[in-house]
Image 1 (cartoon, rainbow, N blue to C red):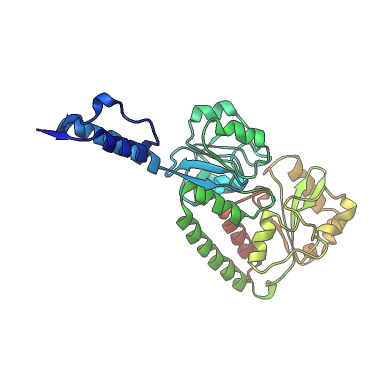
Image 2 (cartoon, rainbow, N blue to C red; image 1 turned 90 degrees about the vertical axis):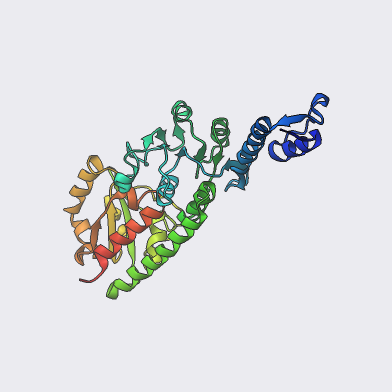
Length: 335
C-alpha cells in the first residue's frame, strides 16, 4: 500500500522544523511513498523538530542573546558562584575553575565538588581542556573579558550569568535560567529566606550586632567591603558591618598594618585565611599574641571566630550562603 504526499506539504513541514526554505525538487512532487519510506521521512521531520525544540534563547547578564540547550548535559562553570549555583540546582559540572587562591574547587564545597575536573583559574581557563571536555553549555559569570567570551562561544554556548558587583542571588537566577532550573532556584531562595529568619531569631541578645569579616594575609589583615558575599549574607540574618567598615564594593581592603588593628574591631570578628595552612596562618597565629590584638573589644569579649577564609572572604553562591548562616548560628546563638 502506498500513500500520496505532496511536495508542498513536505516543504511546509521542513520549513517549520528545520528552517530550510529551499523547496523540494520537482521530481519528487506528488511522489507516492510506501509506508516504510513515509515512516522514515516522518522520523527525520520529527527529529528535526525535536532538535529545534531542544534549544531556546535567552538574554544573559551582558545583554547578549544566546541559544542554549533545553537540557544541558555537559556544563562547565568558570567562577565559584556558578559552580556553587549549579550544584545547588542539582547539576554536576564536568569542569570548573579553582577557587581564588586555591588549587581545587572552593574548599567549602567539600565532597560536592570533589569529582569536578579543575581546568584552570578564574579568567585563565585552559581552552584545550575546555575543548576536550566537549561542553554543551559554559557558565561564564563575572568574566569581564569579551575576547575570552568570544573564544568560549566558538566551543559551546557561553552565558554570562552575572556581572561583577551583582549579588549571589542574581548569579543564582542567571545560572538557573541558563540551566532551565528556575523553579529549583525559586524553591531554594524560599528555603534560604526561612533559614535566615530562623538564624536571626536564634541570636537572642546578639541580634543586630556588628560583625567584622577579616581575611588574614601574610602581610596583615584586610576586611571585606560592604557588599562582599559574606556581608550580604549576614545582613540577611539581621547583622551589620561596623560603621568604620562601610566602603562600597565586593572585594577586600588593602592589608592593614598591625598598628591599625582597631580597624578590624567590631562586636564580633570572623577571621580566616584562604589556605588552611601556610604563611598567612602563621602570621595570624603570631598576631593573636600581640597586645594590640588582645586589646580589641571583640577579643576581650571572647567574640573572635575562626572561619574558612575561602568561604567567608571569597565569592560564593547559595550553598556558601547556607554555610555562612550555619557558622553564624554556631558561633553567636546563645546556648
